[in-house]
Image (cartoon, rainbow, N blue to C red):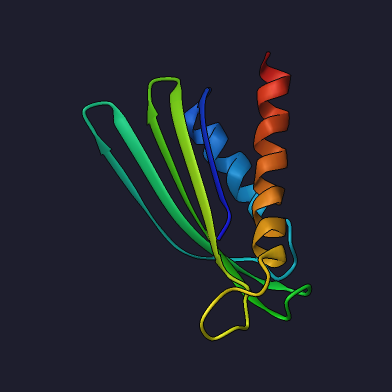
Length: 114
């Protein structure tokens, strides 16, 4: 499992589009499902993605949650899968690589905004 959490400022819809585009840049990536929620000015978007990991010869998933209130945002992304072991994880290279596609895009956007 690899995990990324970040508090940032920006437009909720634009950040969600940026995250989706970053994750979907892999040819084997697909969006499995998602859900959106809004109440009292707070918005929540939850997405689940999956892609094939050539490094591990298996599929890995990424769960993404974006929470926003005005321009204050909180992003959490957690990957799972990618190991072929029965009782413990042998490698997490595929998970980390999948997560890094998102991290690079978000961090680059933050730097552009400053």
